[in-house]
Picture 1: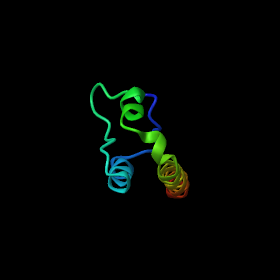
Picture 2 (picture 1 turned 120 degrees about the horizontal axis):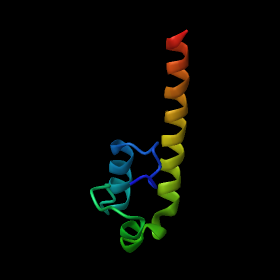
Picture 3 (picture 1 turned 120 degrees about the vertical axis):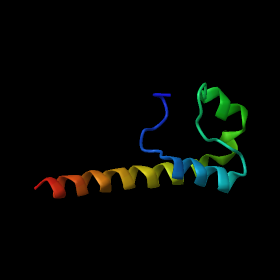
Length: 70
């Protein structure tokens, strides 16, 4: 599942699932086609918001690690 944004943690997938009422949680054999088939296109705004939040959180965590190492 390398194609999945590595910034998206379980909590982000759960948030997308909660907001869309469709389970998008990655699992073995999970493909991009799976989420297309579930209608993710209708929820692009939600996915974009959660993805942006995940990215900001990852960058913040990266900065904290840099501070801790000093």
